[in-house]
Length: 301
Ligand code: CAA
Image (cartoon, rainbow, N blue to C red; front, side, top):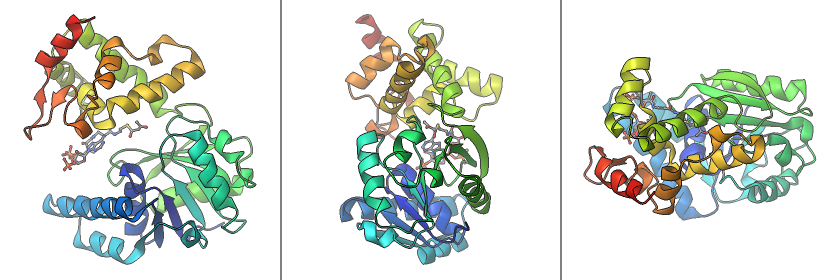
């Protein structure tokens, strides 16, 4: 089972990052979106990311050329027919994922490996929608995908040794590091990261320190590259709330339960960077700590 050609489902933030990473490492890669508009937006994002990296002297012109040569986009499932590995990065909706995998199962060859980039669903619940449970794995990438080196490679009880080994070898070839995980909600990173992020919100709710000081404490005191409240804004508050909800349902533990402030912020559409407002205000370019607005919200508690 050698992976030579890669398919990616979804050209959003994760899908475009995965497709970019596979292509820059010389894998012919086809990324599929539901319509041309979303596809064009995703592909533009890939080249914008590369151009910014070149300006910052972190990316190279060679990388841009590789991606130009090896990455193609499509809106048709049929164009994924010749892929050896197909990585799904569509919205976290089990029904939608299963419909997609079931449709694709009939189109691609019997040896093609299916992988899901889910961060919170059980891989086995998707594998069951296909006739290739032995060739079904989880491959959980991290944001921003072209930069972050980790991939959680998840095997179910039915994943074959060959499929798992092929996935691990692929991860190495795209210059990432794979960690092997069993198929449990949140795998390793979210199991540890989600309670940490939610605890940072609890600390803020308790009035322990300002937004900036909570972030500074963890960056300066523990050497984290980003403070937890900034990271929440980057991941998306609604995403963390959603993942925490799934983990609460699965484990029934209070550390995964969304604090009052997070629920309120999500209700108000304060999703973080993508909505330009979260723990920081991004509307004026440079992020400004949003303490005044958050304190006002907390008065409602
Ligand atoms: N999500 C989305 N974009 C991110 C990001 C994140 N977590 N972290 C950084 N970026 C983006 C920045 O916005 C920036 O893009 P723009 O130029 O468009 O503003 C670009 O990546 C580069 O970021 P920096 O300016 O910070 O550049 P740097 O080289 O100094 O550092 C970095 C890059 C090492 C990625 C650093 O930003 C970092 O460590 N970020 C945190 C990464 C992290 O913790 N990722 C895990 C998130 S959790 C997850 O992905 C799993 C899940 O299931 C929820």
